[in-house]
Each structure stands twice: as structure tokens, then as C-alpha cells.
Image (cartoon, rainbow, N blue to C red; front, side, top):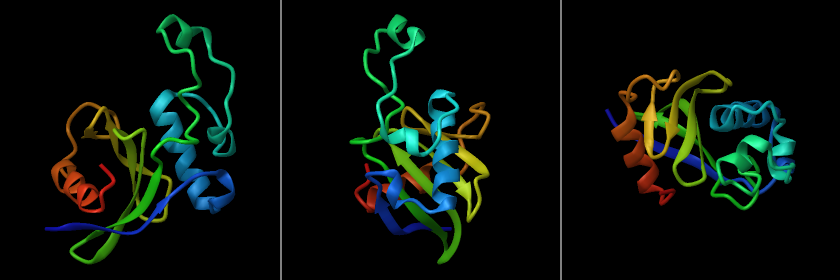
Length: 136
């Protein structure tokens, strides 16, 4: 089995997003920080929470503007099977094609099952496909 990316897009703002993109980006954000925040709000600074300040974070880490934010189709043996989002260089989500159903999450450079309980079986192949497109 081989995985390849196509239609890779760097995303700089919400105005570039389709309705599906917005639904997927919403999931990407909530999987990243657990915050209920619209796709549009992922490109503006919101106040830093007390919890973040307690962890020494003095910026809005949930703002994806200026981050490495990419979306692409993932093809298995030439067939579009998944959509992938990658952000902050080491995080992201893999979705069933054309849906907002998360099938894997990338946390600190490791693709995991959606519940983050185990490495995802496609992790190595997916990372290889992302590196081939110079995403990381």
C-alpha cells in the first residue's frame, strides 16, 4: 500500500475555506486544544485563558494564523480515501474523505487513534507522504 497527497493547500485565513473545510478545521481545533471555537475564530487572537497562563503560555495557541496550516487529499494506491490537516508542524487530524469524521490525530509528531490510546496503523505511511510534499 502507498499513500500520496494531492491538492495540498496552505491555509492563511477562514475566507479560503469551504463549508467542509470549516467543519474539518473545527474538529482539528477541538482535537488540538479542546476549545469550542469556530473556524473563523481560529484565525484571530482570543484572550489567553487562566489555564494557559498557569502553564506558562502567554499567547493564543489556538490561533492558527501564521502557523504551518495545510490541508490535502490522501490517496491510497491512487484512490482518494482521506483528507488530512496538519498544523503547528507536529499536530493534525486525518478524516474520512469528504467528512468531518476524525480517524486519526497527530499529537507531538505521532499519529494516534482518535482516542489517542494507540499509534495509528497508517502513521508511518502518512508521515512519509507528508514528508514527500515537504510539509514536515
